[in-house]
Amino acid sequence: MNPNHNGHATKKAPALDSGDTIERLMRPYYVQLAKLAFDDANADHGLGVAFDLDNPYVQTAIDHLAKQVRNVTETTKQQIADMTGRAAAEGWSTEQLARQIRQLGVDMSRSRSLTIARTESASGYTQGSISAYQASGVVSGTTWLMGPDSCAICQALDGSTADLGGEFADGISGPPAHPRCTCVLVPIIAE
Ligand SMILES: [Zn+2]
Image (cartoon, rainbow, N blue to C red; front, side, top):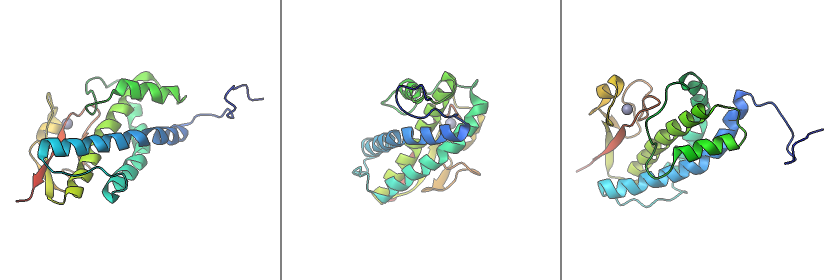
């Protein structure tokens, strides 16, 4: 008999299962991050774009993030010991997100859940920014702006440009370039 009081069947929690669970959990945060990125695009760059969950750019960004999260959970296995630092996207707590991941019963350490929360926050913010720039219709590309105390990887990327949604280096379409990356993308606004 299943002894769980919540009525759900007890099952093993292999890595793939965790991926599914995290993906479901993360979706609302991606929406929140996309909204935040839109707000910043307006406040910091005067783009005047209204956030709309039905906007195809926003939908594409969120779907992309949800698919990518599986790879992230694999990657972060090797990075558990290597995290502190970034307070994720401005405005909400990664500590809180990490706690929620663990409360779902996903079998992972505190540090791993924090790494996922931070990496996903940075990815979500970048994808949200790109969709805001696309929705604005006046942004032709982005410039990589390195964060404080950036590592050699990010120093090399600093100031480089890419077409909107394009890559800065092989496989790198925006921050985070690594788990504690604090870089952001700045829009290149067409004259
Ligand atoms: Zn960086």
